[in-house]
Length: 167
Image 1 (cartoon, one colour):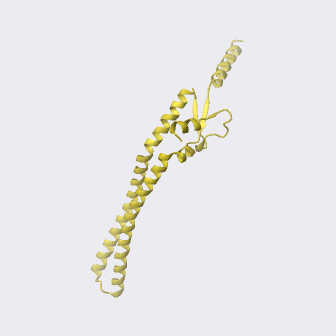
Image 2 (tube, rainbow, N blue to C red; image 1 turned 180 degrees about the horizontal axis):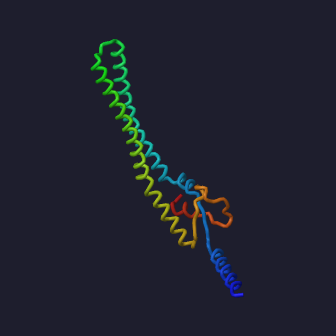
C-alpha cells in the first residue's frame, strides 16, 4: 500500500512539474535574413572577399604569364637543363604561394565573418534571454535548426524579438 501511495505521489509531482513548464520557439534564420545589420555585414563581407580574391587573381595571372614564357622558351630550345630546373622550381614556388594564399583567404574570411556577425548574434541572444525570463519560458527552441517536429503548445516569440530589434 505504501508503494502505491508513493507511486501516485511521484506521478503527481511529475505531472505538476510538466504542466507548469512553458515553451516557445522562433526561426533564427528567418530573423537574421530580416535584420538590416546582417544585410550590412553581408555587404561588407562580400566586398572584403572580392578584395582578397582580386589579389589572388593577380597572383594567378602572373603565374600563367611566367608559365607561358617558360613553355615558349622550352619549346624553342633556348633553355639549358639548369635553366629548365631553375624555372620549374620557381614556378612550383609560385604555385605553392598561390595555394597558401587561397588557404589564408579562407581563414581571413572566416575571421571577418565572425567579427561582423558576433555582435549581431550576441544582441539577438540577449534579447531572446530577456524574453525567456520575462515570460517565464522553460525553453525556447530554434525551429530553423529542425529541432521541432510539433509546436502546437509553444509560443512563437519571433514577433517579440523583431519588435525589440526594431524590425
